[in-house]
Length: 202
Image 1 (tube, one colour):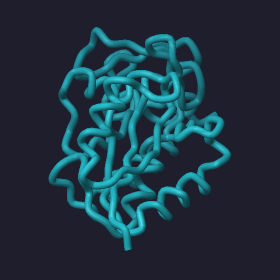
Image 2 (cartoon, helix red, strand yellow):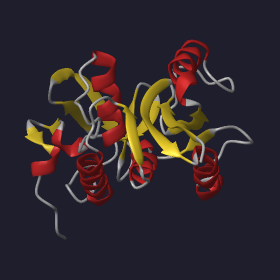
Image 3 (cartoon, helix red, strand yellow):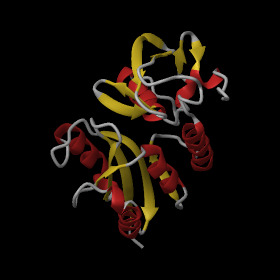
C-alpha cells in the first residue's frame, strides 16, 4: 500500500480550500511551492492541515468524489468549510503531519464540537440583524458586519465566524495548537460575548 500525504490549504478567498496529495518526501517542497506561487490563478495559499495515510491516492480520489458538487472546474479547489474536510480526514487511519504534535482523537473531538457549535449558532436567534457590527474580543479594533444568519462581512468577503477567527489569529501569528475555534467565543456585540447572548424567543 502506497503511503503519502493528503493536505488541505486555505486560500485568499473565503470558503475556498485546496485538497491535494503529495508523496511524504515531497511534502515540504510542495507546500513551499504552493504558498509562493498559488494554484489555478488563486493566491494566498496557506497550509491548514495534513495527514500521512496508506492508500493516499484512493483516499484523495474519494474526497474529491464526496465533495464533487463543491469542486471548482477540474481543479483541486473546493467551496467548502475547511473544518468539515479536516473532520473527515481525522476519521481516517493515519498520522497528523500538520499542525505538529496533534493528538488525532482529541483533535477530532475538538473540531466536531466547534463545527456543531458553528452549525447551531444564529445571529438572528441572538437578536442581531443584518448591518449590526461585531468586534473581535482579543483586538477590539477588528470589526465585522452581520450579513446573514451565520455570516459576516470582513475585508470585502463574506465569512462564517469560525474560519474568520482562524484567519485573524493566523494573520497575527497566534494560532492555537488545534486550529479549531468556536467563533462565537471570540466576538462581542456591545461588550457581550456572542456565545453568551440569550436566544430571542418571539
